[in-house]
Each structure stands twice: as C-alpha cells, then as structure tokens.
Length: 181
Length: 84
Image (cartoon, rainbow over all chains, first blue to last red):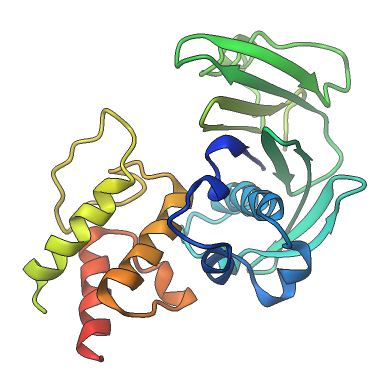
C-alpha cells in the first residue's frame, strides 16, 4: 500500500487566521511529536505525513477514523526527508519534499519498490502544468492524464499501488512501476 | 438546548467549509462530512475548533472521530452541552 498527500501552502493552516497555531497543535499533534513542530511549516509537514499514512492504513484496515492523534509520528529526518509513522501497531515509512510553495509526502508499508511520482501545478481544473518527475528510478514515464489513472495501468490486469492527492493548485500522484504485492 | 437549536448553530459552521461546487447542500442526520459534503479533512479540525467555540464545550481527541456525520455531531454536542 502507498498513500500520498500534497498541500498547497498558500492555502494551508497558516492561511487561516481564524484559529491559532496552538489551537491546531492541540488537535493534531501528540505530545511525543512536539519536538517536530516548531512552526507553521512543520505543522503542514506533520499534517501531510498523517494524511498520507492514514491513506495507507485505510487501505489495510477498512475501519475509518478521523482522529489525527491516533496517527503517531515516531521519526522525522529533515536531512534525508524521511519519516516513520505508527497507527494501531501498523508501521509506515516514507519520504517528503517540503518547499515554501508545497509539501508532498509518500507513505508506504514497504521500502523495496520503485515509484513513479509526479507533481502538477493546476492553472485551473482542466489545464495542468507538469512540474517534475521524481523517484522515477527506471527512467520510464507513464502517460498520465492529470486527474486520472495512467493509460498503462488501465490496460493492465496486474495490481499496482496507486495514490493521488489534490489540494489548492497542486495535484500529486504516485504509482508503483512494477506490480505491488 | 434541543436538536433543532444545535443544528441551527452547527449547519452554518459546516457550510463554511464546503468548497466543492457539486455538493448537495441538503443536510440530514445521515450526512457524512467527508463523503457527502466532501469537506477537506483539514477542515474537520476547523469544524471541531469552531464547534468548541460556538457551544463553549471541549471535545476530546477520542470524541473527534465521533463527529463523522451531522447526526453524530449533534448527539455529541448535545451531551456536552447538557453536562455544562
């Protein structure tokens, strides 16, 4: 399983003047995670990590929940852009990219597979500007429709791990480039 | 505070965070905040914070996940308000 999340930082938590940083911390961040959360930027990253891990968990265990504090981040390494998360004794790891404009996160329950990861900036809901292919470890590209499944996957009977996320002006997707078992 | 009074205060809070143009704005007890109203999950946190302020109550971490539908949210708020 993989799960991804993207946040358009121009409309993330900081853009909401209605509630304070402390308000959001109280609802999202566990005491054990406070060392990871000193700024609005950190809060965006923590939220994106929890969202992506939640998507992995949701695929593993069909019981849905909405409590972000049940998702516990046990490690964030900003040098390597990697993290580890625990939810009900399930562990997920992943990596992220954090910029002043966006943050994206990929969580998975294994490490030994290759992903094709793509990020789009959406001018509107019909036009998409391709920003970057990353983690495309075999140098191949799938033909993505910006808001849909890649053509190569639609024509395959194999099971691929796939996740996508949209927030604000950003659309982000990740797919395993080999079948994911 | 009865159910109608709670809904009268809760509904505008919820509708603040509906951003998808294709959402049907008819709200019933069974309306699911994420699935039916397509509210962004980060905005669920805003709803919880708004509800706490509007009803002068405190919602615990475990209670947050009970606020999945409008009916369950009303039930939770009702219990909290009664306990004041």
